Image (tube, helix red, strand yellow):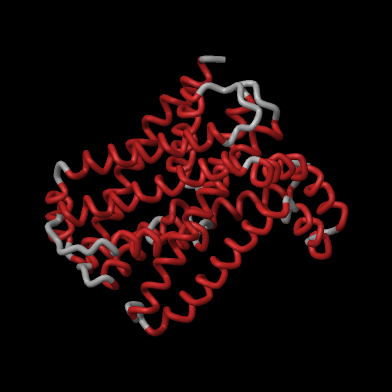
Length: 334
């Protein structure tokens, strides 16, 4: 039962663990700023200046493109783009302000779509489709970035084995996606049922039955609508390019030397953080440390990477604030 002692204990332990991780993350951010030099980081943030407005506009464009991708992922139609855009921004608010990442934000988008009249299977399948194709585009970028880092020998020796493992897993994920798209065979439900050996057969079967309608719609989209699949994937690729443009804008605003491959390496190199450290609220501390490391790897000051991470956090909070208004708007239109 929901209010049973084991459930309450689990929730309490989870909440405590998240708060502890968040505290550690903030401690890491403070340490990174102190090591880089508080004055240096403050000066770099000041040097970004009007570049911050360009970053905010670029990120707004990225969200609009991802909203379009989500809109085109709805096979049944019937939802206005304006509503989907508000839902997309609302999801950003849930993700950034609750520090839960996609674990709460993606289901929230599905729930909001059902409030616009979509069947639950169609709504959650559209959200899953958009997120899957975004992840595939991210995986391609991550594979390119990690390959460049390994070929150049830019990573510390201790990190190279981990980078190779991440690269292999990334390629495997892309292969699994390609298999599902070309054959029309779903992989999620069979995997969930196979986990019954560990989680219990009846529990795994219930989970599989809940997932199956959503995966059926998702696989139909991937296998039976190749033109729309290509269109949505192109949008997700464009969204990745806008994130790389953010990096270029910040590097240029700081007056640092730059190569066209730098945004690819930085944005692609940071992708695995969102997945590997998704249990850390907001990736606080992890994201800042990764950006600092990647900037050092491309021969730029680690303080500049830290500055970029802070700029992104500020613009994300501004979008989250707009998302709160969008969330209320979606509800008011009921």
